[in-house]
Length: 169
Image (cartoon, rainbow, N blue to C red; front, side, top):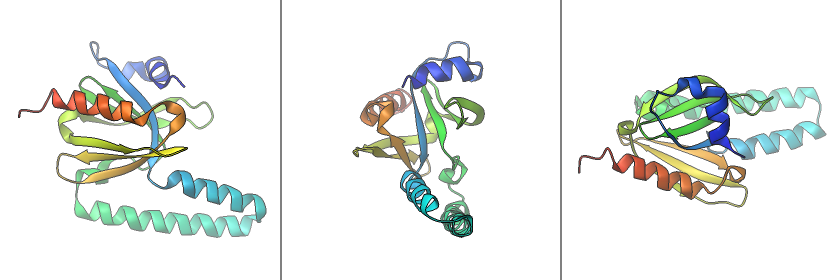
């Protein structure tokens, strides 16, 4: 899937005039892929009452995890908590909402200067890879990225190379 093309076509207006996209991926909070697959399987086998209970449990569990991060006041608490587009440019990171019907980027949720980050790591999986964004304040954001978008290590390499250009060391 050409995510860079999707961002250029549907969200190019959010780029600065001389900004270049280095990579773009669809990301989501860590564990969301597995949770959604389990919920989809359970939902197909059960009625709406059980589905509602699962949704309520999921909401409480996600909010408890999120509340702990937000209570810390760390930069990671500001990072969007839904499936979204992660776009790396030569100067910033843009995060757009994900349009489920079209698979395109929608609303601009957040922008970050590259100096807001300390780095990124990837752990490859068969269908879902794990990414960890390290924020400048020492906090981190665990993410899932689907393999269909290409090798996650390519994103890590591009991200860390772009970040190195801003490193004063």
